[in-house]
Length: 159
Image (cartoon, rainbow, N blue to C red; front, top):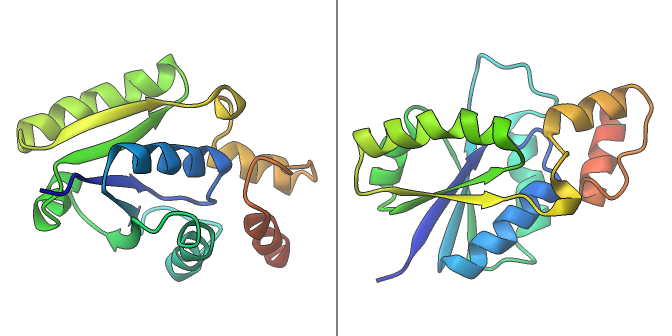
């Protein structure tokens, strides 16, 4: 039986921290579904199709066991639909852990067959978040080395 996991997120924008978590998830699982959460309540920098395209262009050449999909609704329901037994989440700090813990417990309550794997961010990425990347970029700061080059190109096109 293949070990399948979902790595959910908005990926707006995709950071090198996300890529690192995906790479490490690929070492643990036979298949990793990078699941882009469609959340109409947010005002993203990139549209859903743009983010899917970026994810495909950055991840597909490097990670053949990665699939890019979109989903709405409860993550545990999506896990059930995709017959996935694990959720991958990255944590950078105690604050992230405190945020993730109630969701882990609720997901376990809603679907005890799905385990959550928390991967601690690498030291280089421990302070990087998508919102911080957008803020620094919009204020004219350099985000080189923090996001894939394609993301920088696409962000410049948005200016």
